[in-house]
Length: 136
Image (cartoon, rainbow, N blue to C red; front, top):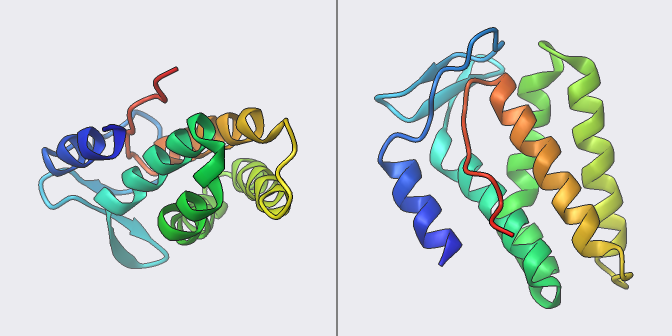
């Protein structure tokens, strides 16, 4: 349900410009500049939705993380690195923590996924992309 809603929102032009952000988002085209190339916004937003869904459904967290989020996390970290190295580092650290837990998920996995979702959402904001907050 969350994935479908986020997809609809993303396709409806969820990418927005945020004041003071380092990215260059094209709201009408649904793209953002990362490393000199245009990246579609919809998959970046969907990655956030997948992380939120993984936090709510830890039994399928590994699948959601690797199928829908992993590559986008790296893309966004690369895009944020030149704008805010601290934010990029925080994102990669949160990603690494979750990734290391997916093999043998501890009880803390849902909370760590929720933290990753918050850090990722803030990182998207640095690229002038908005994503809906996780529904609790």
